[in-house]
Length: 279
Image 1: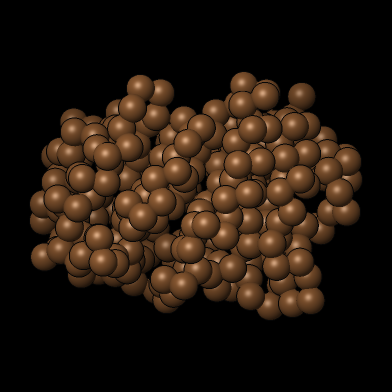
Image 2: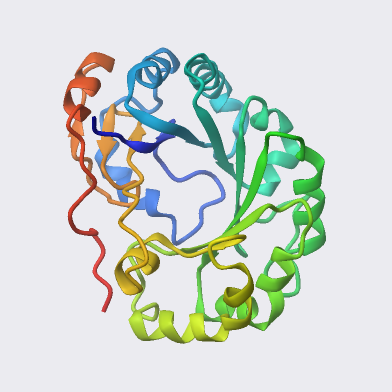
């Protein structure tokens, strides 16, 4: 039987008000023209109820209150099937709306210099470690895994990460693991040579934490190093769009309802090739 692995949901599929210039959702703006701007909670729940998924992930952007009905519907449907549920959001959202982790088994906090606000200020190296630690510890509980997803948004931020910031994030007791996330599509500076040199600078941390508390970007692990297969990261968004890879701009198909979605994904296979070439 085929599996979708972790099936992700973006309840609107558009950039949020944070407005990160590197947001992969920005490439989707034209794709939703004239379509539904929000994914119907009942439809999302019906998809979760029947999808051949190992677990479910929901991205919550600002303002979080807009997505509460959809998130709660997905949480209930995942619980009914005994599926794990990950919520991906920012520390600012969690600090303002801690209810976003209700029913979640994993919290993924997106971390980079753009993810800041009144309760999560910009730190010396682009991240306020104390604020991140407070947010992670405020929601820590048995059964909830807290992940810091650190995006490599610029050479300067990568310098900060290699210079001690990444070690500082790994040292936060309430953070269970850290994921390194490259931008999609990769900017010209983030080529194969840069990635290899960056990993070399991280060697002391990799020796201790790789595969345990520190995990590499999907295309670095799968394509550059050949350590794994492509995890695909399939995604459902408003407009009833399905993408085999969450980062691709164009949808693979638009489905009519949950039954149509089930039929179209019954023989799902991860993409044979990554949509993003690495030079």
